[in-house]
Image 1 (cartoon, rainbow, N blue to C red):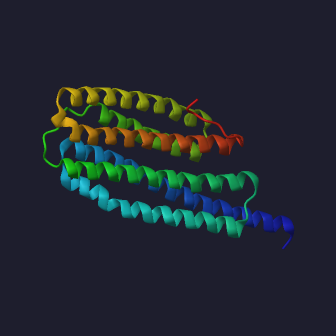
Image 2 (cartoon, rainbow, N blue to C red; image 1 turned 180 degrees about the vertical axis):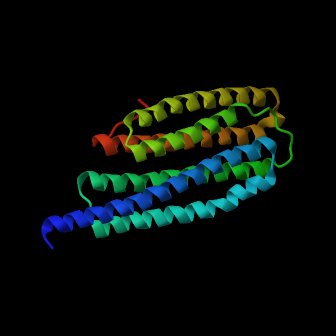
Image 3 (spheres, rainbow, N blue to C red; image 1 turned 120 degrees about the vertical axis):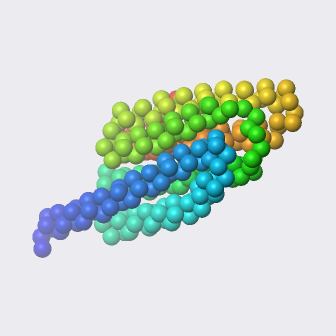
Length: 226
């Protein structure tokens, strides 16, 4: 077999393996999106069974993360990708870590729901569900940007991150006023502050993914938060 034929065959195998990895990444992303939606729904409706289901489902996400990472390392070891091909694998590897961390935050929110239990909520939850919807949107956009290698879509993720930050600021100020007016609300208000903070961190990880997409396409590191 000539060197050119060997390269072509290796390239075909590489593309097949990357297609499998991208499919698994999309599946991981859909699990994470569902986890974010379910954990905030559980909090809003005080559905303790749903909160527990989010916690229980985190093991599946962890297992899928490990599988993807192992397959990424296998591709690097067996296919020896270079330049842009190597960046594709490295980007996917890093994205997997970001997605797993998002799922951890969703699990933490579910645990807060269990702690609050059936206590009456100190305020209607409006901005927290809005943050969750935006975070889910950001996750999907970031993953789509990776698959399409779409710079414009990746940049749009950074714009949504600004809105999530603004919502968290509103939540912080509102809860601070509630605590000052009624010290008995401090424990639950603190729990809700953590929820807002963790949703804000989820959006940060989605932004990380978008920045990795920009690096993949352009070969240059840049920040979407500047």
